Image (cartoon, rainbow, N blue to C red):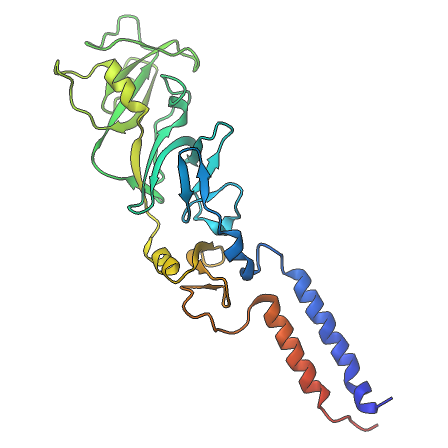
Amino acid sequence: MNSQFLSWFPLFSILVILEISVLIRIPSCSSNPDVFYETCGTAFSCGNISGIGYPFRGTGSPEYCGYPGLVLNCNQDNITLIESMGMAYRVLGIDQTIQFMRIAREDLMESRCPQDLVNTTLDYTLFDYASTNYMNVTFIFGCPVSTNFPGLSNLTCGSNGYSSAYLLPGAQGPGSCNVSVVVPAPLIQADLGGTLNTTSLDQIVQEGFQVKWKVDGKACSDCTASSGLCGYNLSTNQSTCYCSKPPYMSNTCLATAAGPSGSSGTRSFVMKMWLSLAWFPARGP
């Protein structure tokens, strides 16, 4: 057998084994950027919420498809929910053009009284109130029998440990009562009688309130303008752009002629090494 062939054959075998081990270590869907474009290409739709993309993702999509904390869930009743600060909210509408979302506490959508006896708290790292056109209302529970709020009547509760509650405009403390729960609601004016009554407050709570998410939309706009899909880089903790061709992950998809990536890059490197070694002269004994 040709001595030159024998001289580089063991080294070639090592390179082949090296390539196989590298390919095995690359997960098929979590680390290989050439699949990100296909994986994140499905928009979220549920009930009256449809066609929602980044920065949101559905619960069934990988983490790299959406911004952390902006995960939408479609329940068995085709209702869209989002969880924030340990509280479940029903999503009543999303406008991705202006980055507005209308949400309402889920525990108030099926009951006249909150089931979780805690104040509504926004995650200000992700959200802010969309405008000043909202007001706070307060549910107050466990009041002494002698308590009287003029113009207001008791709401019937019964499923949160209290049989009834008062609903007042503004953010109120419990005072002589046991518990107060503050909830944002759309801003309304006093009725024709000059006062806000329990019925009018009760009706607006389920209308929810608008929030604005704080994720910068400029990078995503540049990405989609270049025929890319927006996603989240778990290594850099920043928004990124997924492309259908190499380099697969970039700021935009305008430069698609960059060098190879992922497993194809490894295979190309091994092939070049093999060709160069094949031409090395054999060393004598």
